[in-house]
Length: 409
Ligand code: ADP
Ligand code: MG
Image 1 (cartoon, rainbow, N blue to C red):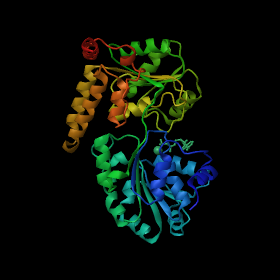
Image 2: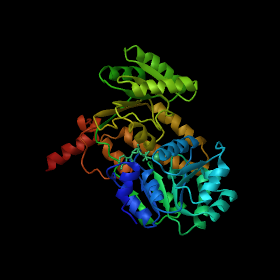
Image 3: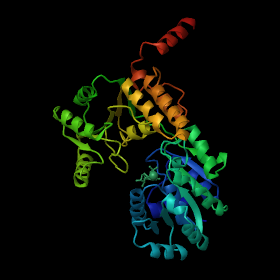
Image 4: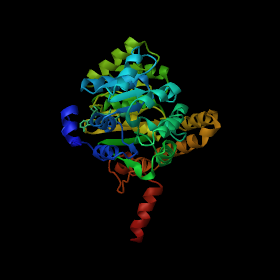
């Protein structure tokens, strides 16, 4: 077999692998099932696309969103990879099946609900599959933050092809969720590869809120560059945008309830701008590639540590300094606890654990980054020196600890 690096350069045009990509690709090419936990933007897609190009047979990619599949399809086709999607909105499904059976596809994208049908099983029986890639694999776990029952139906399909390796991919899985993914998808314990999660150029700042709008107005007065303000409600994004506009900064609102043309226009304006503040619900961000976002501010509690990491991770993709602010109130926790009480019983324990972890992050007087990275199983032995608590150690338990150690030394 040729050198994966040659294919990386000739097909994808990248000079070298990044982070753990090579490790993952080597396992896949050796036929070993793997769970790769890599942060957003780390280049997970490449870890199945490259083996798919190098090997005969098709890589079947399970992906939860049709819109994401079509983005991936466009990107893959653009570099000359033979790819297709098989979804309810594709009118060329018969043609796609034919291409698969002819061995003329490197990648076949499907949603989990289609993958688990008898029709699809039969199709695969008649063709040649070299790899199963399961994207957003945390969806298979009730411990994950985005459980999709359809992901549970994949296992019988995978087990039908015991010789075909499985590659599960996710950006967001705590220890518990990872163990569950391995178990649910039948991947051996030693098949886990975790990439570094640290984003050293992001400064984490978390504070109680009294008036989030005023607090955010104050901070943007001192914070140049483009920024994202996450607001819990759709109506709230528009109010926030109007209030922040009074500071003189260009602002826009973004949420799923806006007219699609306006939503697209606001997103495009933000991507092109050097100083705009976009006030958005969490609907904003997926698939948006703006490297120079200088700050992200949460005007309320995110859904989980995973969500916090993902949303703050949209700041400072260019590697230059960026700040992540979070303003929270006791009432946010009260509401979140109430929501936990409303989810189906099987998921309540997971939701409660997630909420407790979030509580730990906002209330800690220690290093935020250390706590955040520990949550993802990443070691950060030293205090980071780039979060509010490291920069201005709060007077409290930790300060007393330090004082005691100092006195007893
Ligand atoms: P993820 O799914 O992990 O969030 P993607 O697979 O969407 O990330 O990749 C993020 C970006 O990184 C894409 O623009 C991709 O082309 C780019 N990329 C992936 N691998 C490399 C590499 N080895 N060198 C340079 N860029 C890469
Ligand atoms: Mg991805």
